[in-house]
Length: 290
Image (cartoon, rainbow, N blue to C red; front, side, top):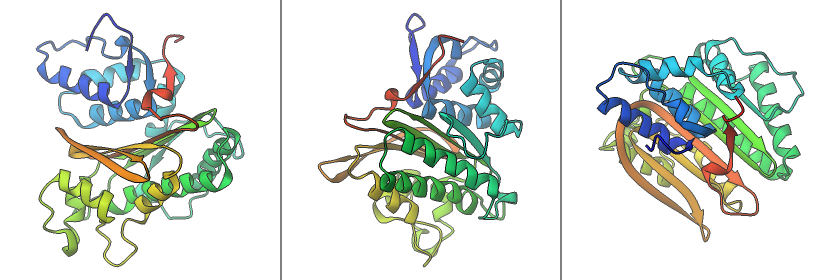
């Protein structure tokens, strides 16, 4: 990263921060976040995941706690259970919520109100009702996947959900700190032979693979592609040591998979801009006023 440039903390640069950490010989906090003039939702959540699980990421965690900007504070308060609950029928620009399997009942009033606020914000931002409901259905299914699929050998994993909605554009992220797609698929005899995290991502995207046998495998991802097919959305799916960039071109799904340093858990980020080609940087929070 260029110290002299004003950078955007997106999902790519969040990974660059981790790489810088691993090659640095200094033990002092060197101001990773001070290099950025803005951040995307995906970049924030990716940075959070890296700092939460990486054994050398104490410096990243320290810097996160020092941030005073409202989006950072909202994300950290949600994870720590200290967030201020939004009014039930409000439509905030952004909001985060922790996903806790031990208290997930499928009928949590707080979660349903959170979904309602996301839906309301999407409608206000100019998304037609059918598409907004499709986005919400995918969002809810991905959150439920954290509960159903991120644990391993009886363990449970917590996750984080967040959305950000501006005029005619939105982004959402769902992440967990669990076992990843490959180990999750290996629970099912149908997918026990999947050899790598890369292959696991491709199986999920192209074959709707799931650890749940005979229970509507991969319905969340099917709904995701269906809802986004005509709206130019892009998605990024990360698990273990692989990441996939997923977009739709000429009616077909295009998936670009690459290998990256390993991290526990899964992160799905989606962004969409109406009327033009979507890019993650189109939805950013400014850090320059804080």
